[in-house]
Image (cartoon, rainbow, N blue to C red; front, side, top):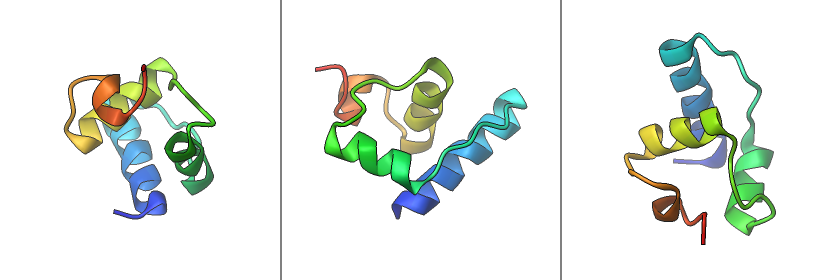
Length: 64
């Protein structure tokens, strides 16, 4: 999955499950990958875990 596809999937999950229309793009995903952002906000983290099928932030490479 590309960064843009992941961002779109997260935004879609947020919209479908929470009715939340938050901006998220490939640049934010790149910041997560580089470690420039070490933790995600509540809804973003929840959406990333759901889309990627992991149970905690450590599985996303965060929260270390």
